[in-house]
Length: 509
Image 1 (cartoon, one colour):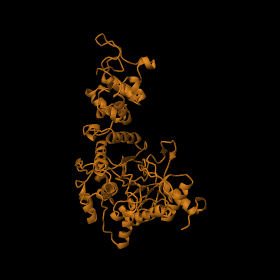
Image 2 (spheres, helix red, strand yellow; image 1 turned 135 degrees about the vertical axis):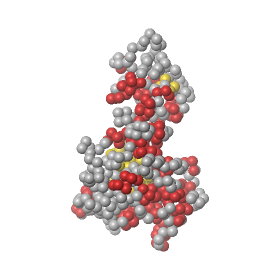
Image 3 (cartoon, helix red, strand yellow; image 1 turned 45 degrees about the horizontal axis):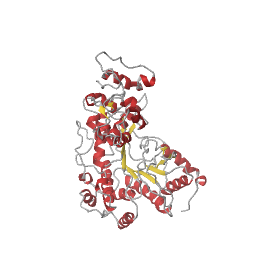
Image 4 (spheres, one colour; image 1 turned 135 degrees about the horizontal axis):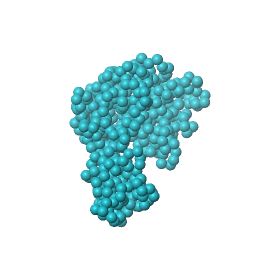
């Protein structure tokens, strides 16, 4: 098929583009590409590990993706989805050739650096994913596009199709949709938790085998061990049969893969339904491509059902531990359908709640926190007035102050205002010199938060007695301030005669 420039495409495809790009608004794609792939002779484009949808790369460029649906036709009737079958909205469907031409034409004009492709369910899951696979095959093999591609998988898709697409895509994601099985049954009865988790487990295990085949050490796989599922009342955040049993409904070869019977250095073997599919799958496996090299992610709608933050955070922790996810996205519920089963949102989506969940998620992924540390059943919702790390610190003041000159990495990460990079800088710098507060500021530590929780060489930054209420008052409302001898604003308590009057006295709580 001859390549057609965007300027000469029919108006029909521009109308499709308008409909299907708007329909993709509720799919979150703002994640780093996570894969580094340089351009090759005879191919077009590359993939930069720091590439992110609608964000900025390390060199200052705004990096973006063509974010569209293959179709907004859907045979499902999920109560929260604007594209559900019962909604009276304009419908459109791309052909695989149109998706490929749009992607390449936009890339050549430097409009985009990759493709994010999701879809409604046209006819059935297998038909829809077959069309997506065909589009990817054209992009990769006819146009030799070497750039970044993110695909949303559809529940109940044949595992052979999932694997075929995995050899062409950089990242795959399967939307969990709602945090618990009860919520899914109520608002999306045509989907099941098992149908969503099965392809996620398949992608995880196939990636593991591919990494073994390429000689990547097991320690670098980042495949966590399985942990017991969370069981809250009658709700089922994760099934009990995580691990190899998640693939019980998948073909026997995938069960063998889940049992991890194949030694490193061997490709997976499946038994597709016909010889042509088998030959095509073998061709994809024998190519130089990697299987979903950027990993997988998922997305949860927050606020459409009555789950607490306690349940949501524990579900996210289970997903990270059981499915090797790179990212869990949280999407504040927006009532686009007016269904009577959905809650009203007169004040708009709960963006602050979404923000707090993202902060808690960062603590899980990067700061070595456990879900039970971030939130407890006694207080099942995150404190919207205070970020989760500061909230934890205020509830554990007995563990502070922390001496930055001697604390280990895990302990440094617990200090509000200290991030992953600044903790590593502290460890490196203190090998050769004693640290001062001025040094900490240069390392990127947010002293207006950290100063309440640290000592440096035995001294605090503030020569005064501070009560928990005083610390909380200054943390709330973003009223954190540097001491008066720096800011010129005397906002701190007067020392009593019983306190040590020297500058840099002991931090007392």
